[in-house]
Amino acid sequence: MSAVDPNEKLVRMANQIAAFFRSYPQDEAVAGIHKHVTAFWTPRMREQLAAYCGDGEHGLDPLALTALKVTPKARSPIPDAVADPQEQGLGASDAG
Image (cartoon, rainbow, N blue to C red; front, side, top):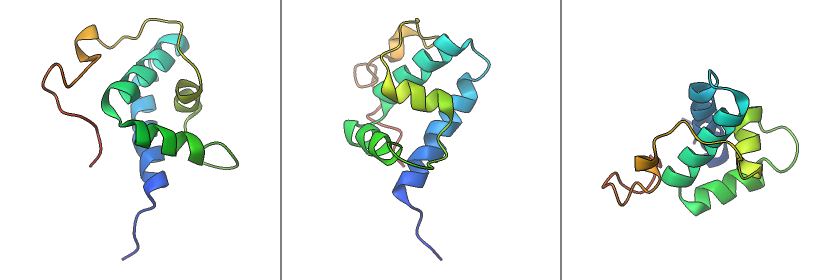
């Protein structure tokens, strides 16, 4: 059995988030992805994915890639209650 590449796992997770937000207008989708990743992923996870996707083929959904690179100008469709999951008692990250 081969080990799963942690970078590929992050790409898969980010692509799942992007798939969820795909039905929203692009600016709201980017904002929603950005807010989710900021709220539920550790800084190390975000940095690792950004570094992995910096060059070449990475397979990351274009919406997720945009959400990693920019501070969204649109309002996220995610309710503000999840802006800080630790304050809400929801845990620290999506890491499995």
